[in-house]
Image (cartoon, rainbow, N blue to C red; front, side, top):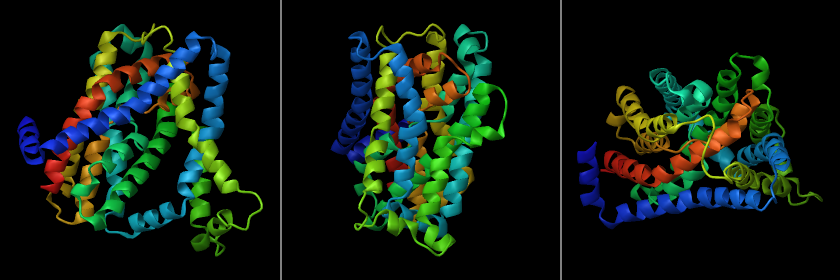
Length: 361
């Protein structure tokens, strides 16, 4: 691993600094929005009751709008068609699910290993989820845009496509398997939540022309519509992540401390999510044969999966845990995100460098 880093640094030179700069810049959005939430809470502009209401609105309206808008973009439809019809399509779906489930197992192992720790006893389910599910869309896209020029021009669209598909699977598993873990039982009703419904509706609208012979997507984006529903839903969805991070920051107004988490549980979550998930991804790519493939799309697939394996925990996990019955989920998840974001610029830079060396050399 470290030899790979050294070779990568010699080969890439100044580009390694560019990756680190992009990682720091990308993380800064998360940190600044979280800090803003903390400042507003200190000023009593955001209060506990208001924070809870904003969180509920984000989960039940803003995030579903964001997901629906992503799937109903004409460009997204074309990219999804390419994914499902390409030779790497089934591989992308299968390996994405496998990687998340393996990381979920890793999270369970970490919780078991440190079960005597008070933090694990109080918030073991949340630690498990923080290892399994990372920031799968916004941050990866920011980082990958800085290095996509290392791939041939005809393969660059597949980079964004892989992130989009991985992020969709990530959200689906978070709101089903994640809620089941937090609530302690598997319920069919967990599948019927606003985000999954929005995902299903978005896919239906996108592929309505193929499914029912009437193209709802064209009607939805028609310039002759007197009311711009598409633009409105897109704008509403854009509020989701900023507000979610500000709500998370409001619980940190007195510092990144948690009554439930301790130093051991925070360190275990950070190391497992940012570091240990990477060799799991590498082994998955090795045994699936992706590392030996020479096609451009296969190399992109391997690269994206490895980069996704080192992303910090997803901010939505606080809402997932709360939906599963964890009353202190927001405070605990906010603390974990704070520490993940401190270490992630360094770890992400190293993994990006190694992944580039592996899949573009």
